[in-house]
Length: 428
Ligand code: S3P
Image (cartoon, rainbow, N blue to C red; front, side, top):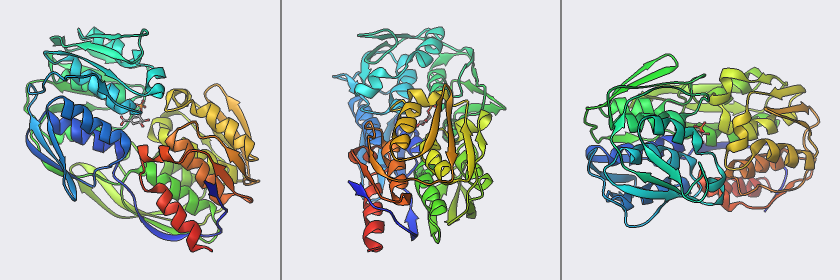
């Protein structure tokens, strides 16, 4: 699709449901007692894969008009699946489910697409094995497809070398089935949706700084919840509003959990005119509306504890940096290499192609901004966030950008290109 330059955008946009919270809503409701209803559930491909996996594990999950209805089977009610579970492109599904499946009383296999089969699983296999789990790569060590044999688990105290909510959540889910207490500590705080939702459903979970403690034994109770809009999806339009001169965009019902709002902090520090309105709380998650106006941006340094708070927004923040006066340094972001694609390679290669002065570093990149983006043809590597970030680059460019695959956006933002087409047609 050819993305043609825009000059201004005035829009009110309802952001689709948060991907992390939608996955957790299905997983935790499946092992709860009673019925749960999830409103504003993200019907992106990743979350549909999570639904499919739990249906294969014997859980009744139905898509109603406005919500998803899950009939929980309780902690011990999952059934042996008749076939291999397939998570598609979803790292959250395979890692969280591996923790959960390790503590069942049956064996099963789980896999995903070519990208998932390349992504590191040792980060969960190692701590889960310390808990007594039996989990092996079937074709290659520490890679999916994985064979998981259900075992009786023991609680552990684990110091994770990386700040990863997927690792933390896999261990906590295994901890629900373990004997004794499970503790996990991370170097920086990663998103805490698991802790919030499990606590809200009745689990014995305690957060102490960078450490989370889980005690088994409590029953989880199903409930009704509304999934907040995904700030990782909102970020594309936050950057678009900031880089296009006379713009004014209002994003409604966005999750603003402090473990996720690094992109807001960064864009504000860069000089973005951003206001958070109508702040409220639902089921322990903070929600607000975000308004952004055309801004003059300046380069900054992004690293350390900020990284886990904006890890998925780095592709589009790199686009913002191309429009910012001065230099932006993104460091401590090695984790980008093991996302849906190697996002350091992808961003540096593709942004260079469309005229950005960008230098690759081992743990990130340096962008010398202020010259904007010329335009050209890019490759998205089938990675949803690269495709959408490059689309924003195209809308802000001088000559437009040809983006190769759009279908991958469906992983996290099914109607993203409907909004983009509407914006491009509107300006004609
Ligand atoms: C996620 C955690 C993050 C994030 C991913 C979703 C989650 O990954 O990048 O998109 O839902 O737990 P890591 O845990 O690998 O940092």
